[in-house]
Amino acid sequence: MKLYYHPISGHAHRAHLFLSLLGLDFELVEVDLMKAEQKSAAFLQLNPFGQVPVLDDNGTVIADSNAILVYLAARYGDATWLPQDPAGAANVQRWLSVAAGEIASGPATARIINLFKKATDPADAIGRAHRILGLIDGTLAGKEWIAAGWPTIADVALYSYIARAPEGNVDLAPYANVQAWLARVEALPRFQPFVKTPVGLAA
Image 1 (spheres, one colour):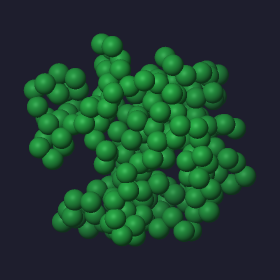
Image 2 (image 1 turned 90 degrees about the vertical axis):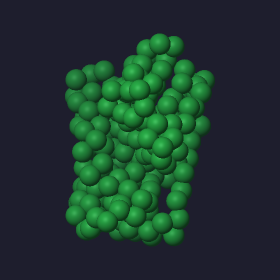
Image 3 (image 1 turned 30 degrees about the vertical axis):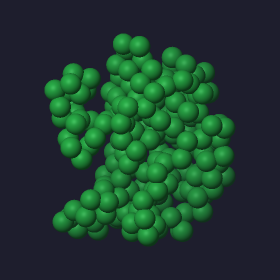
Image 4 (image 1 turned 30 degrees about the horizontal axis):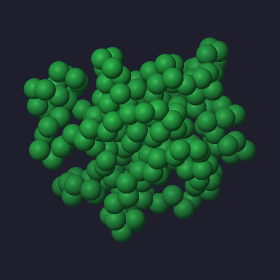
């Protein structure tokens, strides 16, 4: 099993994290994003969208980080990671959509602006980040995990960019429930850390 990734990508990290949490044997293949290797003809055969991560499980190729989480949970996990009852499955899917939507356009975008010194005003992304973090913080009130009474792939999908939100000048101090949840994710067996970059509030 191979995971095509880049260490600075939160999308790639969520796949890397879940592979680790499941205790699977896999090989990391770093894709040089700075040289646009993800747009090369060879890589586009794996993922025509030209993005990391991509999982190659002995010939079964899965692109998109959330799709990889679903595949791994169904193929190698158990029903705790991806509940099979309709309400449980729907609740996990709701948060996968948040990871692909509000998290990507909020904390992830704010972080990218800082990391790559883009000439883009980060105010909108930071504002979106605080709106979704406030919602998540409220959801976690009195709860340990976001979608169930135990960790699911929803927690894995949300973790990476929230954990590194300060790199995009998004302060996590107001969100005590989010901070406690991050610590719980980091205490899971075989947790795989996400690279830290000294930029923004993390400088």
